[in-house]
Length: 234
Image (tube, rainbow, N blue to C red):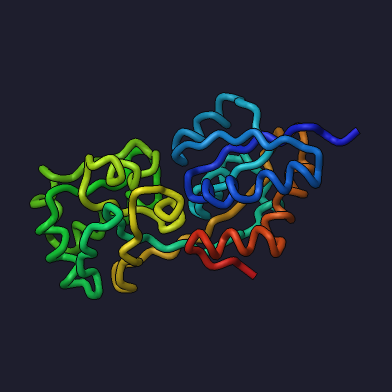
């Protein structure tokens, strides 16, 4: 008898896509998807202490770290999409200029508040953006008005009026109501991250998890990936 449940640990990087495809997958496979979202560091901690999961969905650096520790099956890795870091503001607000490195610097310095993922939780976009601020030479100037998010959706703080600008992966901005995507960071400041899937070492339903990965490469999922602002991997 096929398993009736697939347990998934995922960063928010694929939240919108999973929300879109889950009803179809569950209907066609008669298999429930139980999904727990969290930052990469939290997901790693869960797997190390033995929490049950069948499949992990993370940025490729996070998957590679889990492979190195033997927490996922290296041969099961499949690359799903390419994702860029974007900028979000409240819906209806004037879109700031982010067309160049200089424009981004001016926009950040002029902003009342900025939210991005706390690098300490292992989120790729937060780690990269902190390096961008250092590279631009404005990290110290922005400390007082920067909000370090705990790994949830930074754009939600903008939607609630708690921050003016959010910096996060585009796929984590698009699903949030009440915000608008200004656009991606300029290529000079960009970090294109591959979103990948891997079956866990102790998966109870490895074949079902592989079936979900295959579904993520299907036309239905590809359409959801594109709608989420990402580029499907071949």
